[in-house]
Image (tube, rainbow, N blue to C red; front, side, top):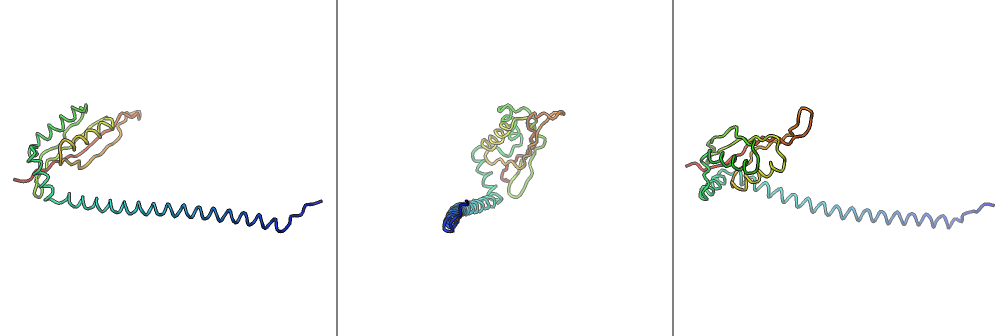
Length: 179
């Protein structure tokens, strides 16, 4: 003998599954709405930060601002006119941090706008990343107004492909107002 399902029992199971699916849909919709509002808040924060960054870039690119920074440095006793002092500073800092391969390959000053720019190209070979970061951090900390204009970091490997550290090629510059 076969058990025959009552029509009412089939409808109850269908209503149960429809109810569960409705609850799951509401849960997913609520979660999506919550995440959407968080994403909109982050989008607004990023937009405000981008606007601030663009304003800082605009101010920093102003030759008058660069001249004011250079004059401030000069008043604090930094001799930014002397490329020898700047080169000595870079070499001393490198030796103090145990970086013996920091070399200047170019230097000198070039007049630009209302200021005088002194640049050095620094090369380092087979250095740990922590020392490289510390070197450039301390450069900017100890010589206010110093700008790392370019920084290229590549892996140093042996002929067999073993990693030996990082090679660095960087251009750093300082600025002094024209007399």
